[in-house]
Length: 401
Image 1 (tube, rainbow, N blue to C red):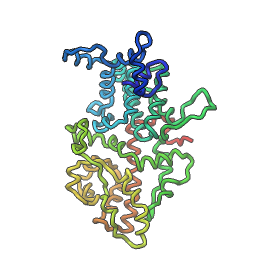
Image 2: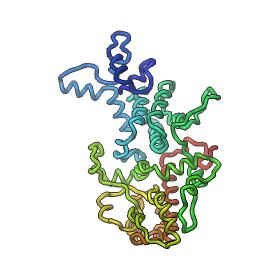
Image 3: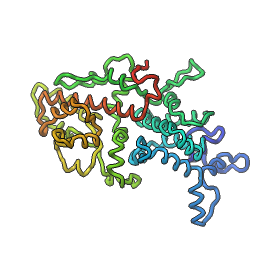
Image 4: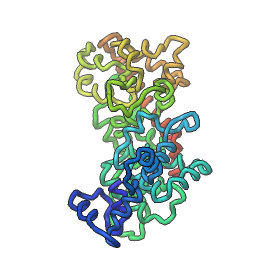
């Protein structure tokens, strides 16, 4: 709120004012009280002890309307299957929330509500930008500062400028001063086809080391950077990929309580975490296993969000039993767990990767590595296509250099 009032004040800047600056601004009177005037536009300015009047003031103030509009747009429900589950909404970074609310304040909450109804692309564009930020931001504070500056100077506020903000943060926005170096505040997205061109698909029993997986030469360094980020740091994004399961499976979950012990789902390793601690494997593969186990164990390809009580009851159950790979019910669990249940090769890979406790063989090591690599790429494909990121790129299969 203070940051938005500050940005709407001439020469106020785009960050949250410090205590001394805030105290000075609030002491101003008359025509100089610009900050106070902007602040009172965002919150109720009339003080009253009447509860009903206080409630009405709060309900009608600009900030309340802006936040309500934002969550109405973003929330997952039967009419918005691409929306954010409640568990993801409450964990959005503060700077990202401030950017989104600031745009709504500038455009007008009622106008945004109307346009979102008549032009669904506004909702889709906001969701795309949020998903991009969650995955690719290199620093929320500096990214937020750049977005505030851009939105303040934006003339056309009829639609949410998600693509332009993406280009701004990734340093790919065309600017008038051609010679000025553009800083990057986020890594670039790349189409799934480009990621597949870079991503190694192993064919041996030996697990790839760090350099072989993440430092391979490629025409477009953005593919290498994004592959590493998706592999290691996309756990929060996985909640959105599994949004149907999260939202429909736990409809009564209230994440606003702030109590993690109330969360009914948790992050689960498909190949159990403990299977990587004290492996029993062939002597020739032992050193390779110890050196490279963590990258595979904690990859997005070996993770899912799942019912916490069911997950606990399974203990160290192997992946075949977890997913009922040999049963007709398998597609039900596979859909819930974010799996490509239409690919017979995928099913076979995970069956071959299933082991008892920590007893690894060369064949199971090979299958597990391939299964994780394949699923990581498939999940990115779902992320890309469900959010329709091809709207930001000329062609989903053209590598941007």
